[in-house]
Image (cartoon, rainbow, N blue to C red):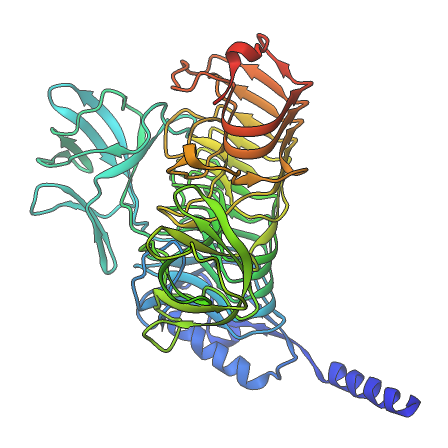
Length: 608
């Protein structure tokens, strides 16, 4: 026996020592900075050469020299990727493709990766123990068009100047149109920023406008006679945008133990980072941000800064900067499948329901699931385990909208396709730490969390998030994003003048807001749990208005040792004039807080 153990140890030692540490200078493959060449066709050639030299256990470092690298659609790798919460347009042109790696480090050493056209900049898939560090992602010609208001007349409409990097024209319909390599955009919506502070302009939310009849009155100066909006004073900067989300800046899928260190995304036409079906992701010093105080741009990404769909393990986001994006700094959730057919007592057909979320793997045999009634968002029956799952009416999960799922025991007879029911995958849910981040000057919301595992939100600054700073949601009716939060700790954060605008779910600085169509007939509670719930403690709220916490269908709310300071930065306007507006909330504790001007439970709090 002793000799057998020694033989095993010797074999393991030999395998370990056989693995090599390989460092590749990318200049060896002609990938050089600051020379203007198109690196897209060189990238796959380099990876093919590297992989031919390496054994499976080798640790690989891909090292760039500092400087700027250009990637164009021409010669880029083509992939069919179905990406959660994005437009499912395929194929995609991908700049930096990394697939099936172990122990890989991509070290940019300060490199700036510049993309042209309509591309997915970086994709890491089916990989383990990989690190991305020390680089930035940007586009030479963003699909968002930036303008500055230079005159505003009730009779003649708005006059604006187009930012110098924007390629634009007046199209055959007489409207503003921007364009680039292989794309055009005729925007009719946008976000307005204060010229000096870069805050989203008070009470403007999503601008809707008409540039019909546009005329050029001077070089890069245009007059839009039908665009009239007295809120847009001269000096206001507008990011003219569309609702499209073709691809994120960074796409992570089916990875384990991924780290991103000192990576910055300055622009992407979708999310800054989208991760799906990954286990253990750490973002340290990650940013979706401008290029410093002197950056002439006022916008970053078209949608969320970071977004995690159907992940598990632990998600850590710390020391990050998230600013001027067109949605949340972070959104963590799973996806409900809607039951559209009950085949037998153990087998159902579940369907992806949202047009931007389908086509990717949903679950695996052995995964734990539970069932929720869409109308009341109540759990029905008992949790089950998947014994088999396969796409419905096709062979592969790629592109699938429906799955046939079989469970380990009969499900409740009330769970049918006649009444709305969703299936939630409990295995692919993460624990979350969101700490020491700065979130500012963005559209819609600061941070959104929907996971039943422990979530800690601490030592962050939420500065002019425009809408709600923190949202706990859950929706089996529209976005179909799971699920209930059981244990959330919100502590030692600073909230500065949230709610300058109204968007979806913006009922208070912190909104606990599941979508429940039939709340009056709900018998249990969606968020929280006996002995757990939401703890909000030791935070500083600086606000010009009244609402601090809104909560719906929650068991367990503690608000303690917080300070609420009142200011006059903007006129109060919110329809909700309660410090605490609660609907079907029990086990509420509010104590040991400091409110400037005092706190009167009789007038400042309502529990419906």
